[in-house]
Amino acid sequence: MEEFTVPIGPQHPALKEPISLRMTFDGEVVKHVDVRLGYNHRGMEKMAEERSYIQNLYLTERICGICSHSHTTCFAQGVEKLMEIEPPKRGLYIRTLVAEIERVHSHLLWLGVAGHEAGFDTFFMYTWRDREIVMDILESISGNRVHYAINTFGGVRRDISETQKQTILDSLSLLKQRTDYYANIGTTEPTFVARIKGVGKLSKELALSLCAVGPTVRASGIKSDVRKDDPYAVYNELPFEVCTADTGDVLGRVVVRVNELFECYKMIEFMLKNLPAGDIAVKAPRRVKENEVVSRYEAPRGENLHYIKSNGTDKPERLKVRAPTLANYPATVEMLKGCFIADIPLIFAAIDPCICCAERMVELVNDKNGEANIVSFSDLKKLASEQYKKCGNKPEPVSIAKQLEKIRRKS
Amino acid sequence: MKIQILAFLPELLKHLFRKTATVDYPFQKLVAPEGFRGTPVLYPEKCIVCKACVRDCPAEAIEIVPVSETEKKFKMTIHNDRCVHCAQCVDSCPTDAMGMNKEFELAAFDRHNLKIDYVYVKSTPVPRTPIATNTPKTEN
Image (cartoon, rainbow over all chains, first blue to last red; front, side, top):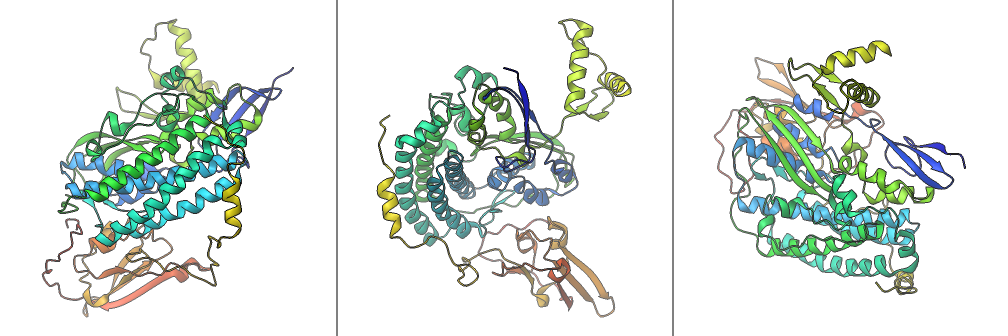
């Protein structure tokens, strides 16, 4: 049979956000996938260079609506390192508490989406109804459902009262009961299991070599979690296990996320019962002396990475964000290969994609004169092939700027 | 892993007799919780025009312009169409002249209708009394 190419997206009913997937099919089976990004670029990194640190705190929060706390915490942690300040214990506990409650809300949301993509809309309705309990907790703690804005440099902005603690603990028992039920349904309901079992396989070796992150890599049997590998905030004091599954399919990703929910409940309960007394924040300076830092954070979707460079003023010189979705694209391409057309939305949803988080650009900087070039993906490809043709198998340093100029002149 | 036939059925039947989970919104409203970040408001009698809120606002939604230099009169405009409701102005204010109310129904046909103007006389700065809360204030 002849192979044919179908563009899925940038605007497509199966995708909630704009991304272009060009797929080559042989009949019903996907043969090749080409992911094209850049339809949702918002220029946030450039914007960050023109704003003060305190303003950037709220800007980074708006990188993503679902893991908003992840981005601010990642940014705040990095800036705190640059400012050489240490938040007090109580502040860190509240910060981590919000982070874990956010993980609960994100995983419940994803469970609903997985149910919806698998054609199990009742499951979607139930999980999203119970997600409201978590949203109410977040609203009562921080004053907003989505953008909590609880972080500040040197701690958190709001304290938790005894009555709030009690209401959270009460809601948790209800959530636990519901999650028990979802764990049961997600792994035993025959129609649902039949739909997601064996779909979107990703082997352990591939997951490792393609640098997948978060529940995607953990579902392939790799214990990779920043909270355990490189503990930040108070994670070295909390009782929790890294959840894994060894099936490496969408079912595995459901199992990992449901088990992580139980770990979250365990941590939230521990934090509320062992909340240390004291201040919630220390005073932070406005100016940051010249330095650079990389901050890592385990967002609900995987490892989040912020690179911050300061230059002695109250504005950062450079902010680079690597959202977890970007790290999962190469693995998604492998997962999609060999699947059926009908499985595409399910597999794509299984990495919990957040496209607007992931949109960044490629910039080549000449190390000799600091000249920067923004390069399109096709130009990069041409450049790579030309360079390799020139020097055989041994890559030699060639002036990138010169080569690019040549390619541009040709085209 | 055991497969259970009709695992979903008891829950489905139970839901037939349950109350609806949603609220009949325009007719029935949920109450915003304590500490909800609604719309920013200014208490003009406390404002010393230090412009800390203007400098820290991430959405550049606050504007202060002098109206009359001799009378020390100023005008503050809060652009609610730009406001992101982060309450940083409340944290930055050294005299607690900014606050947040619980108003969240802000839809309007014209974004300029969302502007709120305050014209007031600058108050003299008084040394801040130490407050028990630990709300961090940014350095001036």
